[in-house]
Amino acid sequence: MGSSIVKSISASALFTLVSGITIKTIGSVITYPTNRAKLESLNYKTLFEVKRDQFIRWREVFVDNKEELIRLIPNITESSTDNEGAYLLKHWCNVQLKSKYDPSIFNDLKRYCTLNIKAALLEAPNTQSIDGIPLDMNKKEMIFNKYEERAIKQGILSRNQKFEDLVGWCKDNFILPYIPSNYGLFYKVKEFCLTPESKF
Image 1 (cartoon, rainbow, N blue to C red):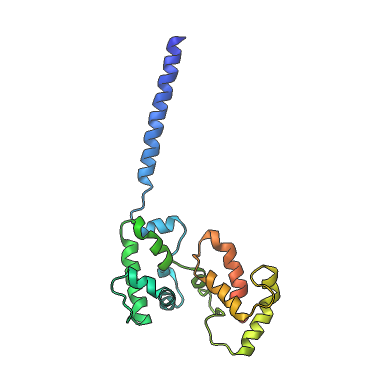
Image 2: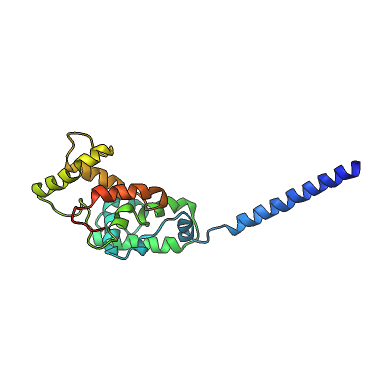
């Protein structure tokens, strides 16, 4: 009886040892050689995958984040034009995405180098966001009247809010990443933040 207990303990110890080695081996296999590989493992897509008006998307990211990008990317300065800044941002992302995975810049890559909700929406032909074109007051009012009641019902707007409030909500959500956890939000933004003529 004593020897069977010893055998059982030995077998358990051996299983634990082998399991530990296996888990450690699997852990070492699941490493991310590049920042891009890590992003892809989290279901992010990069702006390099944009097929429609890609450079415009880079420029929008630059314009929306110029102050932060001046601090982050040495070649970008206060005097950088929007096009220069977009080019330098694109180049920086290209280099960093190919580089070895680096947790210290990973959040910056997620924020500045990946597909956001707006870019994903505008991939479809014949789509236009309500913040992207000059509109006269009549056009703004027409769009707002079309969306207002549904937006109030869904908690996006409250009574007495205006077109500019809807645009503000859209802009806040346009910049969020296009990843599976945001797909529900993506469809809500699609419903309220594209011009009525857009064909998605």
